[in-house]
Image (cartoon, rainbow, N blue to C red; front, side, top):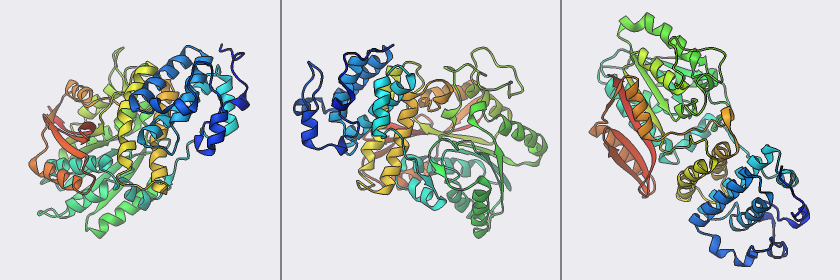
Length: 454
């Protein structure tokens, strides 16, 4: 257990929201012996130093060194205000997540007391209306890149089909679909019948949150499609990533047996959703009562692999996989912290290019990033659902279960470039073998891949 006999009393410890403190309060708050005063903290302000301090703080919390943890937290609190520059706001979010982790452990009683005293650890996640969310995802290429690349690949794959069944596994609640319907409606051979299936309630606990049911969303999409002279059938199947979308897979399997001979195109669109499926660092079936799939898993198989195998068994016309290009799967807290810090600086850096400081949308945007940081840092086991894998690992997974990559055509690349021209100059596009990668200042952000059964 941590011992706090040498820790100053709570009233001597600065609050964890520096924005509420004036300069006299900061200078009166004395650090522990050997640490600089707030006047001498300027040298700690670069991103590398902030990352190192976060790493030392994480190590101190994990080793139950309360004195060192408190000292580092004091320094971080003074150099990373929540209304500072992008690196300071990033560090502030990680600081908050470390405090939540420490307080959750039950050993950092002082940190828990500080959290309760200052009440600034909760994240206010906004619940979007459809119109708000549509506008929100259009602000940045983060999602629009995947929408544009995926729609181009889908349109090419379903050319000539009179019935198209789209299974939309998307974090953004079908925000990609209206643009796809628009494109389908303008086909030379006339619009097909479109069947849209979603996993209802799959991400109800993950931002962005939507303020209406999937039945209501379906009605809006059907009406939109009708306005484009497209007949849309909508179905939401209650299903969750926690069990590998087992009920969705079972329904698709039944449908596949019925419609396999009818010439129906089956499109599986995976937009930033599959990284919530449990992977190898969790036991294969630790969160389900029974095997949700029809084949026996090996001792090393995860629900992630089993889900992809089940998709391959459906013999889809095309699978599009879009996700964030980072590795947040390590069971080691420090490795995970470093990986997250060196990836999630990007959304903080980009936000200055499209949202003014103090705007509501910026608060919503940064709250969603803070939620992700807290999930990566403060939680473990099944509660830690933000388990991103890099493109290279997803490519290997898809190949291992019997898919082959298909290259994005020149038209897709042209459409992505046109979309990027609407945004800040730091955004870029590169092609890696068959795949497309969205970049910010040369750093990989999001990848888009398209797959056919091998």
